[in-house]
Every structure is written in structure tokens, then in C-alpha cells.
Length: 323
Image (cartoon, rainbow, N blue to C red):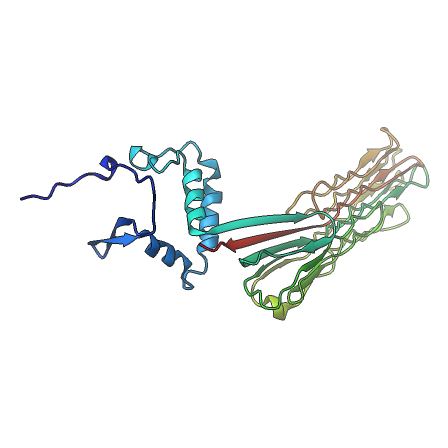
């Protein structure tokens, strides 16, 4: 006598799910069964250390997939879109992601169940160089301010880790350097210097531009093989054209943009000629750690460089919740 079978979509959903419920499984072309508690145990095994990161990545990738619906078979799970189903799986498995952003100095306390964390840090950007034109035939322009140094590191061992002390570097005012940002949890420590300022260029001076910020200074031994370092971005030297250099009464001052970071671009540099307004201030940086734009001035005038932006620290925790 044949054993009656039913399709999965023909079964009634349970109203009281338990750990001893069983689901169909297959390995090496052999069908068998798994209990829910066995599936949860697999997710908690130490030989799957990236499970929390993987589930979080799946949820992140699915944020733009809300229009992808399941068929009637899986719709009985109570989730009607991809993102919702993945978040439900992550919740059952006991994993979560917590992101904390520090725009000002403070202290960070890690979740007691945190298994990994990513620390992103950037120093304050420098202000753009101001410009002062000494005469009608002597234009002046300044380079943009350099951006703060950038850092990203991963923590996977929390032995000895205490509350982290986070210092956020200030952005520089016109012609002023940015300040350093730092992170220190008692084991892992890093400092990201602020952006630097270049020299103004006029008919009597030459500009050196704005060099990149000093290198990031981490305790490499503590971060061992889990860091991504990047110096801050400098700014190119400005360009000026004086009246005598081209045998004409027209002069030009072209400042350069501030250094950018992964969090945003530097401020725009000013551009002015003698047949236009007397000066153009530099634009302010638009992203954390970015530099201000340099200023341009002609016809015996002066202009201020743009403001650098303060630094930033972002702590991303991957948390395993007890089941």
C-alpha cells in the first residue's frame, strides 16, 4: 500500500513552533530530517565564526529587494518580502548588528555578547589657505586644506578590552590644521592625525600645496593583520597669472579644492579674475574629515579659506544573542 504524501505547500503551518519540530534535509543525495534545535546548534558552532557577519550581510544586501515576493509555499512563514525573511532568520539564530556613530568625543561600551567589531576613524580636516592680493597686478590663491588621516580596523578578541575612549578631532578654521582623532580600549589603540595646510601663492611667493596628513599611528601588534590604513588626502598647488607674466592687464587666481575622505568631498577652491569680483572665499568641506577649499583674491583684496570638517568614529558591533 502506497504511503500518502503531501506537498509542503499543502501542509498546515504550526501554531506553536518548538525546537523538536523537524524539517526535510538532504546531503550527498540522501534525504533525511533535521530538528530545529540541530539547525540552531549548527549556527552556534565555533567553526562557523563568520555566521553573524554573513547573516548581517544578507540582510544588508536585501534592503533594495523589498519587491521580491515569495510564492505561496514560503509565504506561510509570515514574511512577504526578502528583507523580512532574512531578518527573521537572523533573529531566530540570535545574531544582530549595532552601529554607533560618534561625531563628538565620548566613551563606548561594547555589548557583552559582541563577537566582532569594526572601528572606523578619521581625523579632522584642515581649513583652506586664505589669500591676500597685495596689488592690482598680483593675484593670490591658496591650496585647499588636507583631509584627516583615515583608519579601519577589525576586533575579534575582546580579552582585556574595556570601555573605549574616543576623541574626535576638530576641523581647522581658515589656514589652520585639523586635529587628531583617536580610539583606545585598553588593548587596541590608534590615532588619526588631522589634515595639514599648504602655503599661499602670489606673484612673490610660491605654493607647496597641502601635503597628505601624517600617517595613521596604530598599535600594529594589537590590531595584527586586521587593519586597513590610508593617509589623508592632500591638495594640489594653486595657479596664478600675474599681469606682467602675460603682458596684459588681466590677472587670474585659481585656488584648489580641499582633500576628500570616504565620508565626503573637500570644499571647492575659489577662482577669480581681475574682470570679476575681487575675491572668492574657499568652500567648506562637506564630509567628515574633509578639508576646506582654498581662497582666491585679486585687485588688492583678501579672502578666507573654507572650514575643514571635524573627524568621525563609527563602531559596528556584531552581536551573538543567547538562545
